[in-house]
Image 1 (cartoon, rainbow, N blue to C red):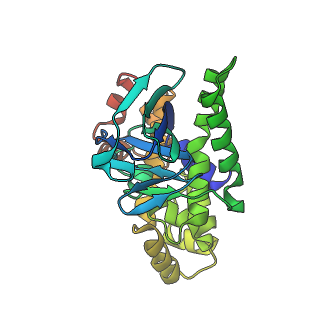
Image 2: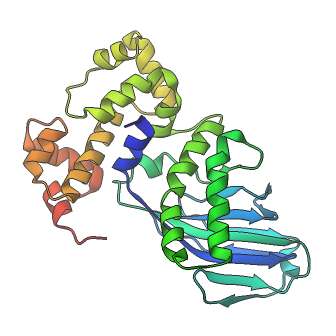
Length: 297
């Protein structure tokens, strides 16, 4: 498994796509703040939208990973015509504006609990990906077009098709973002730094191994000092901190599968169950036993 796929498998993300918008200018779409772990997103499938001083065009995707309240609009929001809703495969939101039209698909990425760190912490407040005219975004552009077609003209199986297509959206979005962004933070910063690929891949594939700084530096063909400096610059965290994050994320997935805490601790490199319990509780706020017994979300 490649490093990005492995990382995404440790941090499950569920995708909901539930609103189809068609607005004629002038229009405004206000979105209230979302709870922690819920990231609203908007797919601009036709036309333009503006938000916080930047213009979004056909094929652009904007995500608010930390759920911040936001506004999308075209024209003077004070002059926007009222919106109206209608039920359907996706709830429809529209208005009676007679200016240029904008079509938007809206939904949410829902992150499972990750102890306040990991994947969600590595995402910026606002994430924008452009797909128009970009060869590196061809797969994502095709996905947007298929989602739009199924939502616009539902046929037999459209609900299942939209659900399956939407499930691939987050992975394609993150891959394209990594390819387009000049700098990326946290865990993604390590993935984006090619010189650290061997080290992060080792942590992901063998979290039970007693990795030392020297081991990771050797895998990356660097001195310990150079490796430690480059890793801290990329991740804004030490290799030991990232290794612990990945171990705890792997432990959470094994606990989700019903494995006992003692076996899980050994599987992620802890010889002492007590030490594993302490590390897990620091990350997730509860011990592994309580985490495994929690009600399914």
